[in-house]
Image (cartoon, rainbow, N blue to C red; front, side):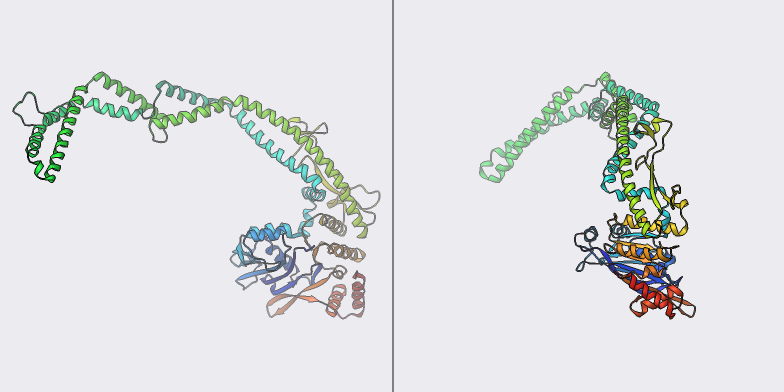
Length: 584
């Protein structure tokens, strides 16, 4: 099986490191060096490369920017490869190039496969690439919440499946409870809103406006208000076109046009052009007759009725009142009708509150019962996984020179006095949260007869490091990521226990890539590749670089770590013995 592993990193102008290439083994890589030589810069670089927080203080003094570049061997079809290709990155024969640039001013840029990408995308890839287990993470594992997360991941689908159902039900319960609370606490406000809507709808219904009515009434009011002027104008226009019976000597348009038609009619046969003009004059005569007839009818039908005008103005006032109150869109009566439609829908919703409260109450009770059943299933799955997890960690401790120590998990629930504030689990009202009703705590009994205590209180510094390492190794076995970074989790361990730490990490490296920053020669001796961060001084400037230790150089480095003397014969003999003992 091809794993996605980090093959190489190049670090430039980061902290005390000026320019260094870090070549990592697919198996076990140990990183050592003198105190203060910048070993943690290797860890920091990997963190930046995988979307970690960018601190401009990390840029080397005097440099404009720090750059970390990495080369990843990516398994075809893996989540990392698919996500990178989705972002437009190019893969070269299964190799993915990643880079992160951090300026001294605090700006940060990321590139993936030659394409600029958001830094957050590197963080997404990190979830499928690397699990970091460092001193800070070790302290995190002392927190019960982190211990529960570790246990849940170790349990796999036995917890993940009911937990997913529980989470969905929990979110729905929160939404239902919030809506129920809103409905009950705002009952008075909603009743007042319903009364206002009902009054407005009654007012609109009483007026019974019709779409377009306001425009028609405006036109009618304009006509009625100027009826006399309109009648006089129509009569005068009719007389000009058709003549005035009271003035037989007057000349009108129809008479003149008729005379013109007669004059042309006598000679039209002599010229087609003139005949066409005669036809057009005939059409004008017909049109004048039609218009004159319509003007006569208009003048006869026009009625200056003061009572009708008063009724129209009164209706317009009623509509104007509705528009002022209910038209927010500026559309007049159409806006009033639109408001009435939405108000009726809202009133139906408000009037249905009592029914809705009953529905929500029933749904809330059903969800609480469902949560109780799922929480009980979760507790059972966690208890079973806790037993297996604790047995595995205890077995690891036996190989880490703690043969009498026993690890266990306390999986418990807290009862609540108010049943309404909890859920029923096994016939008891217990507190619950987004992850179930369980409180999970890792306990340690360091010797036979000792009372199990929380690991933060029941272990010495060296014991705590070994317990944490055992937990990490067992947990790593259930973690799907292909690379594990251990940053001095072997602190406080020495002697035979240190040898066992190295052996356990080497065993883990058979199925994953392991990178360990360590001070212990017993651990470094088990590595497939040994890197040393070296510090040099040039006047007032301190620089660090990274070198691969092989053959005689590796013996000298282990001698230095053992005795502080690279050329000590006893230290060299011990170093060679360590290397021989670490060989498979």
